[in-house]
Image (cartoon, rainbow, N blue to C red):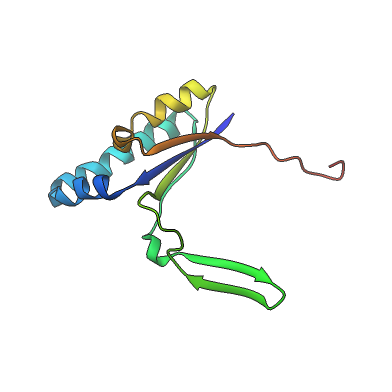
Length: 124
């Protein structure tokens, strides 16, 4: 079963990260790399990406006047999606086990959601 592990950030977690030295930040990136390598070696990693700053996002609206892409951010929120892991593992419990390894889980900023299997083909 596939699960999306969403990793968020908020002012508190960003402040902690900003207080790290460049060496500590490099260690943090290496930590995520080790998790990715481990999940890949077990055949559980489908994809993992960090997201660019929310200020670079585009909101897309498609209506009668055509498609419009406007600048972000769009919501008044303190928690922002910072990255994700898409895993294919045996159970929700395993997905939660993986999610708990991310430092952001200490701030309650990690979410696990099952991915729905989409039907495809002419019989839909």
